[in-house]
Image (tube, rainbow over all chains, first blue to last red; front, side, top):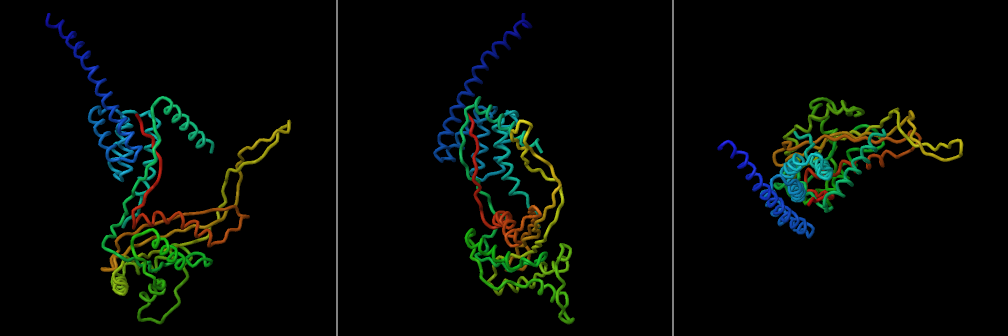
Length: 118
Length: 250
């Protein structure tokens, strides 16, 4: 009797967690959308706040990490930008737009770090 | 040779497909690049001079000093000191021949000829003295080798062809071509005018090649090559902003 209840409990848990995940994604999307709107008005700090919130709400949402990377790049925080791009690509390795952003970022980053320092 | 355009085309197609499937927004950004060297302790900069060699058509010492001074005047916060360009080859020769009779320094034709003079950059006392003379600025010096190049290689060019119906087509043709040009190699050295010690040094190397039948004056090639090096040089001393665009995703 008890063994038979286990799959049922698992099924119910799945049913409950799917809407929870969907809620997280939709909340994260709202934050991302707002972040885009403010970034387009040049309010990058506010955009960073929104995209960081989105990444907290749904850590598996690649656009939040991609957008954060762009904002960090714009702020000159290249180490954080690299980490965010890499996370975005980890989540969506086949996304050509993230790849393109990352390639452009690397071009700048390599130029600034490639030096022959004494 | 075809692989690169094909790769570019396929990545463009991939980007277009991805754009069609996702909500994306192009946004301009300006990436601030911090200077490699902290120059907060200096208010003034002295581009002292360079040990230069290679072709005699361009005075590498004079031209490099002049160009860097004018760039720093407009693109850095530091006050540029106007002074005579130091004849560093003579200074290095004097240091080496001390006690002996004055001799004309041998010409610098190749990179290995520079070795005989490079000890001057490590002469802390000399740079400290120069620093005291100019109120302890940041001192910029180094080596510049501007040498003619000649290279025979296979290059790809486009050729018009007409088929049996008289239709014109342009096809890539690989031909063996004699090319000549110049190379610009050397090192920028940044010295602390207070202590005479080297703070930072950065090597550079650029080349330019033209068709053998094209006549390009050495001086214009020199400026073309220096144009490529200037952003790297300036980014050592002052912050730069690199403009670009990125794609925001929703």
